[in-house]
Length: 228
Image (tube, rainbow, N blue to C red):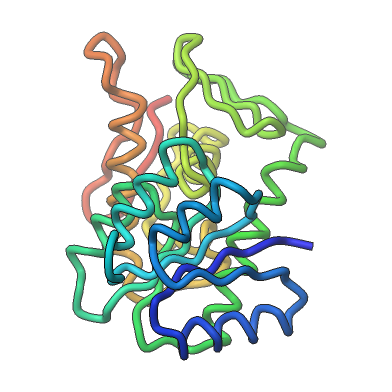
């Protein structure tokens, strides 16, 4: 049974999310501020964290930053509808996906299932192509590790899955819509602009060595591809 940590200061929202996910068979744990959420993460092994952006004390950004110091657990961030900059910042510091308030509880459930499905598929993958090697990068899809010239690179679930998709077909151009659908399991309105943030994070992780050639190319007005 997957364990989900809910960090949300609004009790009504927290309770609704908790009750709904519990009804779907998930084991849930509730926290109502960022500090308690960080402590819960440190003492428990969770498969997913649902994290509110605006909270008293330490906010969602700082909470996610502290969690990311020692964990790659998937994070689904909840944001206000008009905070585009905050959504981008959330993704930049390691959130895997976001949802805007107010949201449909069923849509939240669909996002949760998609994220957990990707995470489980990645851990269980390996029947055919378990290792991807390209331009000094080696990805082990079963162990979910990435090596660049022998140096381990830490990645979130979304970043890992995005890179794996691109590396399986070097030279192929993927549209932003294709990348979103593959990562989320369905088209998510408003997410297209922020797929660029995940690409930015990948480039930052993989191309910080000036001697390493640019790996991920932008195909203007279309999407992205990996250099052959």
